[in-house]
Length: 225
Image (cartoon, rainbow, N blue to C red; front, side, top):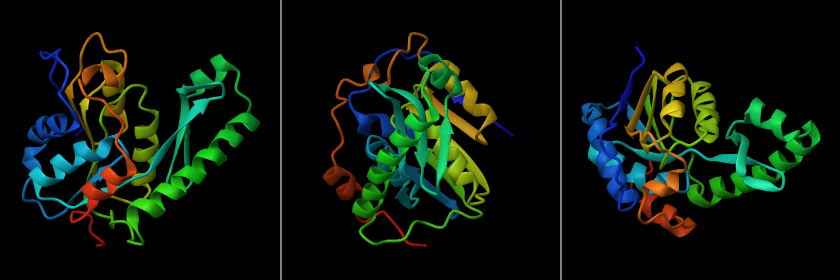
């Protein structure tokens, strides 16, 4: 069964990612106590959110590194994403509209892969990733705009044969949240405002999460089995 759980009544922003994580955790509280749940955070902004979810569920926390592929000259516009395991997801509409060539896509992907590998080495500090086979995986980010990075994450995680994938975010575009109903087994968008334009507008403090903050939040919660 696929489910989209949304709260449309609240149009006010979160104070910060920690508050967002606490509210999001309430929407997945039914998973508390299960021994087969693992929470995967999309770094960097998803880690403070996922930390609160994992803490509430008493579940292991790990990272899942995904990198947005920005349109050349307009890096903020996502034309796709790459994820661990050699997964690449493209937004064909954006690629076509911007006239991005295959060679240009490959060039951006190579650069982003370098950063992807750096982050995995840095955040893990030699620890292997959590085993995902036959587990309920809760994929967490700080929000969904186009959803390109999360789509890459879902595709890459699916290849590791989890029993279930739940996409969980504090806020997201209504259209994008609905799209994930056909991709994930369950989708939780805690807030899905009608006038959504960007994730950052729904946080009073949307300052960048640093690499050190990611390491600190993962310390003591990341597991190896």
